[in-house]
Amino acid sequence: MAVEVEGNDHRIEGCWFYDTCREFRDMGAIYFNLGTEPLQRGTVVRGNLFQEIGVGTDGARGAVYLDNGTMGVAVMDNVFHRVGEGDDGWAVMNHGGAHIRVEGNTFIDCPVPLRFEFWWSNYGSAELPEARRRWESQLAPAGSELHRRRYPELERFFVEDRVRPETNTFANNRIANPRRALLVEGGVRADGEGRDRLLGSDNAVEARLRGLTFDATGRPVIPGSRPWRGFVANRSD
Image 1 (tube, rainbow, N blue to C red):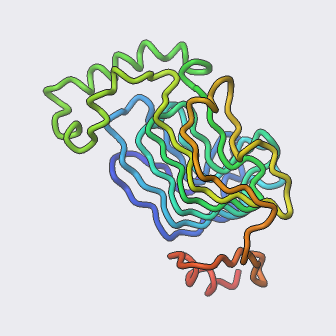
Image 2 (tube, rainbow, N blue to C red):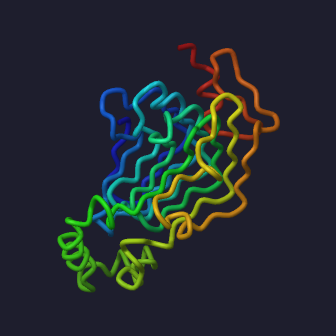
């Protein structure tokens, strides 16, 4: 990985992630594993370029990996260019999490822009009883008052469906695959009835993005302001 996230309210912005996750199959450039830590949330991944990640490999690699029920993360206004390989790869993986927002991103030549799985009902079912005990301990009123004020959604934590959450969004994203095939309808691979529980709207799937060109190094040139554009343009490697 490039970054492993723990804690609260981090901002990962304006970075260029290139050719990460070379050695481990089940991994993302930015990795979260916080499903048993419901008070750790609020991180925003915004305005980054993810490029050439997991291409030419055996899949199950990508850019942002929200593993094992991670909650409360926003992935917004990023550009994903040639991320993931085959229908087992992905650009963003929501592995059973809740309150995950994937909005306003641009996916270029990513076969599976978003993969969405109900982890707690499948691979994590044996761990669910212990996870519930940890959730109850951490969300006890005496120890979580500040977090409840900061994250109002915690007030409904035990009312919401923790196994098959309905609080995830995939909205206002642009998807174009001029050079690599899009392998999933609407840009989403979801297991079982997962697609019905994903709140999606205004995603544009096009053969090509208007105004899309590539510079001499093969990086996308996209109209509009991106924090990483000047940084990328000055790189020679």
